[in-house]
Length: 272
Image (cartoon, one colour):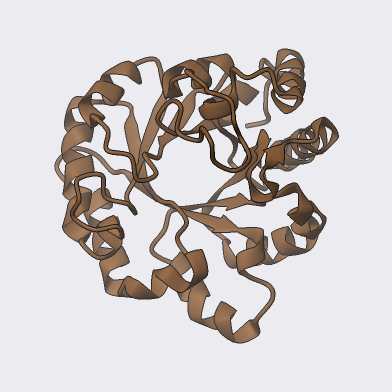
């Protein structure tokens, strides 16, 4: 029987990534793997976020992880800021990495909508990426998308343009970005659920309030943990993704609340 930690992912960035950004003035040294182990996560999405990284070195470090995914949107080799959305052949690199690193299970398009950015990606390109990940001589890999709750449910025409893009994806991660958006969660989650039938779903949880450029409110972190866990137990979602390693060693109260919560629940058994 699966335990809660088997459903936990870390949304990981290169160590120190957000120094002097989003209101953070402290230097973090926690690596993606350290962050995942610290937060009891068995899965990890690695998102360089524009930083040039040595993917092979990171993949070696991820050996303890059960599941690893890499961002497919932003290229880290200077091909294009839009990565596989414009150059679907870049998905082949992930397949080749998966050949050697057996815990690579997926790719993800971070910030997929991003003010209309997705319109730069022909839908056929997304299907090509999905086909490459699904049908290769290594193994089937999943294709994930990042979606924010303020990117839908506001303009009906924009929604009609966007929702067809969900189809080629295996899973969608839903994020609030800022705590000032949390009041929208129930309404937008209902819409999200209607448009992602048959898809895997992961709920993203910020342990630093990126959207509002400040430390997370411990009470808001606790509410999200409890609510998302309820949805996980009810089998409405498939996982929870904690964001991120790059503030995890700075003694923020939001992280402390999360660690206390995990100490109580990480070993909880979930219904099959």
